[in-house]
Structures are given as C-alpha cells and as structure tokens.
Amino acid sequence: QQPVQSPQAVILREGEDAVINCSSSKALYSVHWYRQKHGEAPVFLMILLKGGEQKGHDKISASFNEKKQQSSLYLTASQLSYSGTYFCGTEKETSGSRLTFGEGTQLTVNP
Amino acid sequence: GAVVSQHPSRVICKSGTSVKIECRSLDFQATTMFWYRQFPKKSLMLMATSNEGSKATYEQGVEKDKFLINHASLTLSTLTVTSAHPEDSSFYICSAKRAGGLAGGQFFGPGTRLTVL
Image (cartoon, rainbow over all chains, first blue to last red; front, side, top):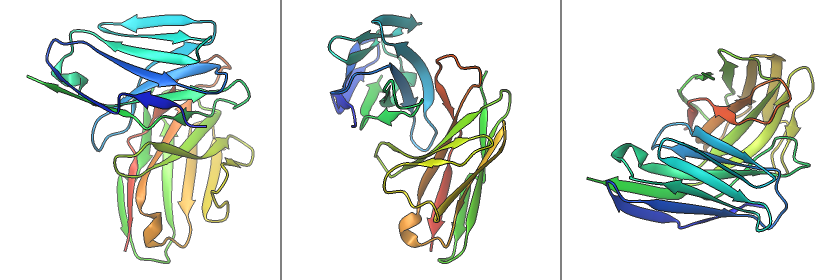
C-alpha cells in the first residue's frame, strides 16, 4: 500500500525551513528518502530503520516514529539546490527490500 | 560513491519492435536490482525485482512476457520491452542495492526515456 506524503507541494524562499511527512498504514522496516529533479533519476538522501531513528547531514535531517509509522524530512535554511520532488519509499519487513513510493512532494525554493 | 548507469538514455522506436535497456552498477556489486516505471509528474512504480542468477519477481499486473528481465551478473541487469506499443512509452529507471546483506539505500540509474511511435 502506497505511503501518503504531505504536503503535495510547498514553495519557500531561500533560507526558510520545510517539513515533509510520510505516513504508512502498514508496519515498516525502513523508510528511504529521495530527491528527484526534473528529467533526472532520484538521488538517495537517507534511510531510517525501525526502532525509531533520527538522521541528518548538513541541513537535511529526518526522523522515523515507529509507533505512528510516520517519517518526517526536515529541510532547514533551504537553498536553491533543494528544489525538486521529494519521495519517501517504504519497506515492510516481508517485502524483501522492495520499496513502495509515495506520490511525492514538490518543493520549490525561490531566491 | 555508488554509481549506476543505464543505456540507452533515450530511445524512440516503432510499434511492434523490441527494446533492450541495460542497467549497470559501476563501482559495486548488486545482487538485487529493481526496475521502475515513472509517468510524468507521478511516483515511481515498481515493476519487478531482478536477482542475480535467478528469475525476476514481477509485481502484480506487470506482464512477464512483455517485460523480460535478465540479471546476468552482479553488475548487469537488462529489461527488454517486447513488441512495444505506444502505451509502453514511459521513463524506465533501474536501481541497485549493494550486496552484503546490510540495510542500505537503493541507488538509481539516470533512467531511459522510451517513446514508441
């Protein structure tokens, strides 16, 4: 079952923060976050495993709340290069590494 | 890094012909590769899981005889779209997962845009 991402789209000014959420109705083993720019392949950002994790690098971080089966991606002090569509991919314990992707969140960062 | 290449990047063919797309992991071994299809402004839809040395596992609704997958080595998987029709036009993307058994992300190739006339 496809995870639900929110919001569908967000527009920011450079330097502003954003949060993108990803919720699943199924028990998850891991959540993967990717960013895709128009016409290009998705780029891996990070993976969070069950057990409740929080990860980050630079100004992009994420958390995974196992109880709620929800992950959030945090973008702080956004840069123009952050623009793109963000996808979460969820993996169930029994899915054998197969990911189910959400519909995506389109992020636009303006100067 | 973890680099995955795809070839060709773009292909235009006539209806009824077959098209082969290659996916290679360049700097790591991948026992498992995945094939996705993506329509404009839509999400990635998993078509099949390709395992080195064994038959591919197809998702529900994906025709095995139409989308032939071969995973000949730890660095190469191919997807052949047989007897392509205009409705097969799409962006096909492969991804590869590092061998080793540890949890890790999938690394995507640059994609192949298929247009069937």
